[in-house]
Structure formats: C-alpha cells, structure tokens
Image (cartoon, helix red, strand yellow):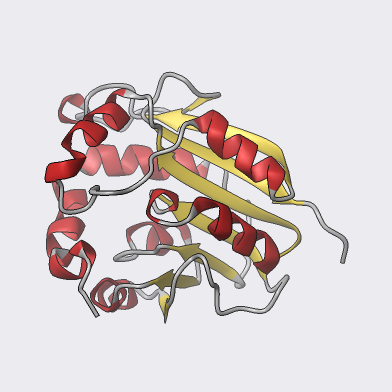
Length: 213
C-alpha cells in the first residue's frame, strides 16, 4: 500500500504545532468554546493525526489511517483505532461526541458526515473545525497545494458548504466560532475567537444529531 504524506512526514507535521504555538492555542480556544462542559467517555476525534487536539480537549478515542500518526497520538494517552472517516468501525448511536479538526477536507465529506451521524447517539454533538476555503489562509493553501506534501488533491470547503452538508445529513442547532484573523506569521499571541464566520481563516461548527432513539 502506498504511504501517504502523513506517514512519510509525520514528525514534520507534528513539529508544526511547536513552531506555531499561538496559532495552535488560538485553534484550541475556538474549539473549546463549543465543547460540552463535560466530555463523555464515548467521544472520538476522526482524523486524530498525532493527537494534538484530542489529548488537550479530553477526547477518549482517536481514529486515523496513518499508523505512524497513531503511534504518537497513543503516546499522548489517546486510545487509537486505525481506520477512515468514510467507514467507521463503530456501532450506530455509540458516541456522544465526534470531533473533526482540519480532516474533513481529506475525506469524502458527504460519506464522512453520513457516518458521523450514524455513529452519534440522539442529541450527540459533532464539532467540525476547518480552514475556510475563501479565507486568507485557505487561498494561500490552495495556491501552494500542488507543491505541498499535505494539501495536494484535497477539497477545501466554505462555511456555507459545510453548514449545508450538515443540515442535509440530519444535523441541526448550529453554533459557529472563528479565529486566525491575520496571516499565520503575524500571530504571536493567542487570538480570542469570535462568533459567526467570514473574518477568520479557521472556522469551527458545533451541530446536534437529531434522530429518534
């Protein structure tokens, strides 16, 4: 099986967060604002990578197709499962919280959201964080995509597109935060997240799974 860029450049990916601490802190803070006050044990991050977000946010499980990424996530006390977001190895209605951080663009978004809905318990929460396609950072990443190890041949989304897909797949009660209002190299201190979207490059949406028990 051909190795992905995430298997080949695992440490390069993980070290990015150490080199950009204010950006990382800003992203974490925006997600935290939409997290439940109490994190249920049956919680999972899909596309967990090296566990940078799951470990800090108290998420129990992490799923990813990269074995090398999962090894590092495991060292951060995340319970790791190898797999992909389009075919989740869990029973229906088995999770209370699903988190996706900059991973939806690497998947078939429609299938991944369908699977997240299937796996979530009634009234469970899905939190999706992503780089906004039309933002400063989104435009920069798209321009450099052909030269990038990580962003080649992926699909960035606008906030409107993600909101529309969530509604189509049975999610309601949307709440939105945004952050990263400046170019990354100019962010030296943690930015305070704002409600709504359209200004920040990093968008976070929390949605509720509406289905009968």
